[in-house]
Length: 183
Image (cartoon, rainbow, N blue to C red; front, side, top):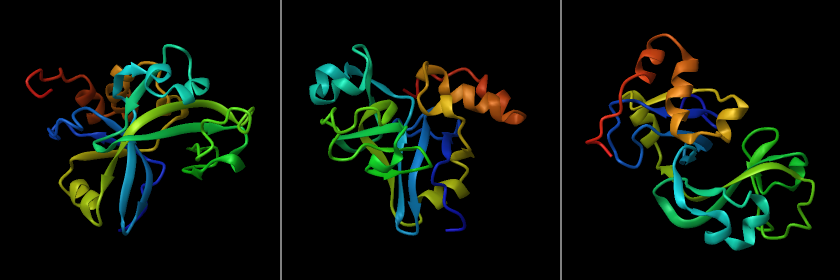
């Protein structure tokens, strides 16, 4: 592994046709020689947080949806958050971005600690060398995120928005129509 991609975005290349990752944007939360773990940022599920995980409803607005973080451990709940008090995070990805720990259902313990949060079911995962192989095959485009992309208001446009921001040939890719036969 040349360099850790922790904290970076992986944008699915148009040639990546795995239905789990077509037109996805993945935040890499951990990347070591032992593999990588990330969250798909632009796949909202049909269930609201209050319906699917009532204990975590305090973290979200009533209409906020659970997001599908990836195809690994799909029943596991992961909460990505921006922290005003990062010392209470279960694990940090960046300075104030990380995961709510096991006390996620304890609103009192985390009062005033979290600026915003999103609830995910499952995550994306790669074994040793797997992500590096996919990068060599140009299945992913790597880009540093800007804060609004980590909690997008419109997840349906995140893929094209990030590519558009990257500019050049990527802006052209961003405008490609979606192939309805892929999903």
